Image (cartoon, rainbow, N blue to C red; front, top):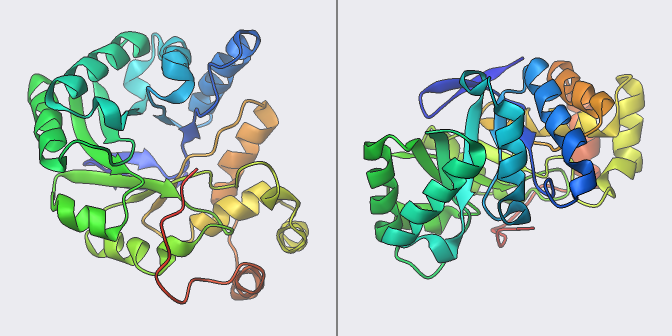
Length: 273
């Protein structure tokens, strides 16, 4: 699988998302198993957050990585309302307990809130000095937010990105590329399933003997600085996500996608879900 340097560490460009995991006790075993199978397949970057099922997703991740923590690059996020000096410290320690680990590889501010960025960054740096996190970054930040942050230590920005949500291509994606800051794409195959039934993506998928999800993933990965974090619980879907790494879209494929989902011609508000 293709890899990229994130926070000084080589990670796969396709990881595993965990949004909506931990919400249904009846699905817990399947979710743990899916994450473990994903690790076995090489998707060793796992993204979670204290927001997901109010810590439930972190508990699922903790079960999945028990006994194999060293194999995993672990990403979690802090709520904006916990992004004060003391709030960050307490939130991180709660996440560490749920995850069953001493260190989070990458800790993100989930989105901007009421606390000054300087206060949150100072709290992140204190966690790093304590060894509780190795690097920090942000999520749902636009270009003006990143400019205000003005922090070379910021390892990544995690944002919504897929063919139907590509406004970041106008300025944010190129800005991050110039800064050598990898972009982490959440919901890379869309939200709610509409993208997976798009006729254009289906035609391209048929051409490549692939699925529409694989085409959407391959599309996002055409940018060398992008990491995609799709969520999957089904083993077939996990394998398809991994195999998307080998799908190569040609100029005609990309032109068809541009026609169906036009690239931005001006600045757009940052999309979030």
